[in-house]
Image 1 (cartoon, one colour):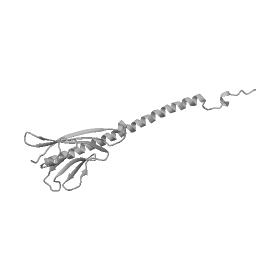
Image 2 (cartoon, helix red, strand yellow):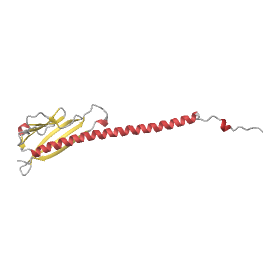
Image 3 (cartoon, one colour):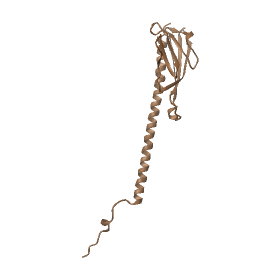
Image 4 (tube, one colour):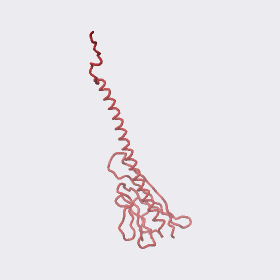
Length: 178
């Protein structure tokens, strides 16, 4: 009796060149998609962080100015600059430790100066304030109101549109003590 050899058992097992190229091409396509998706997630995260930083700085600066106006006893009209993009607001307060309270724009930051203390920035170094405008209004009841407008952008020298985000914010407050 002669033994018939099974051809399948003696054939070397492995990938053919065509199978290898197919698997490699499929793996490359999947990896390209995963890397592209990951890059887009990182870009979106950075954009969200930039937007949140600028919006938070604008909101906090406007709220701090409006709180100062509400707590003030009056305006120092001669020391204030109204209706200009680089405005100054000088407020009279009853407390000697805060009189006068001055809000201004210097070096791309909104600053507050209370009495003889040194000026303190209200905005962080991540943003650049491009506009600080104060307007005053007299209300029908004789009260004085101050409107503040702030324009700022994320501070970057990059030409990437993703990193170039600008925002504006505004608010109005009435001087309660007359």
